[in-house]
Length: 286
Ligand code: DAU
Image (cartoon, rainbow, N blue to C red; front, side, top):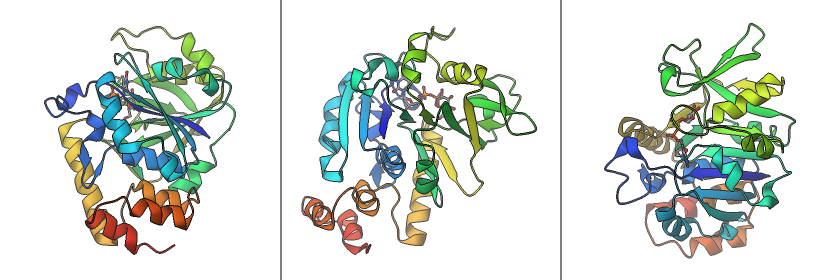
């Protein structure tokens, strides 16, 4: 599956943390933020990922992640000059991506839950668009979806001041090939951005949008503010310490989903300096 991972933007909501580095390289406890959505995409079956960054971040991102071959995937990079909106990713994608279904994940979103990878793999390649809904206490801060009594979507709004639903839309979306054409039709919203909710509405109007409510046992965190960044780090620390298992290690995920052989996995380990990260990877048994 092809996927786009969005790690552009200015990180204005966490200024000055984002001045010297890209927000998506900041730590969420013991790993760079980008590892979490990247591994979610790997678990969902993505093998070709387009990583969208701002101009300043591309080199550091390449230094961290490379071309993905060490994890059995292919990663390409594209620059977004200005944060003109999430759907601009479709306009920046090389023509090779057009004509295929694609998953889109926001680089500051973290999803964690039992059986998530398996459940996500069922959405790949479906007709139309598939999104998730997650009950939150602060719906005005997100794109929200309103459902009717049969759980069919009837309304989607970006950051409503008076929300008609408390179901937020997490930053992981599955689209059919038509998303690339739909993105070309978009006009900037009053805040001057292309809006992901406008893409979703174009599917909704044609009855081509499916919504799955994420179970309560699934954690969805976004890390776009200082508070939520700290909360996400704390969440990861608590789960990892309790279970002795790490969340969001690309080396581990690549082995578990069969993207690399055991020999490749151990080859990757030989490039990691001694420390708790390496120790953990040495300890996992498949
Ligand atoms: O977190 C989920 C929410 O993400 C959704 O519910 C909203 O519908 C969606 O618009 C988005 O809202 P945010 O206010 O969180 O979007 P933000 O501008 O913070 O950007 C989210 C991520 O996308 C972040 O990792 C930066 C990246 N981004 C964003 C824009 C606007 C880009 O790479 N380029 C962009 O132009």
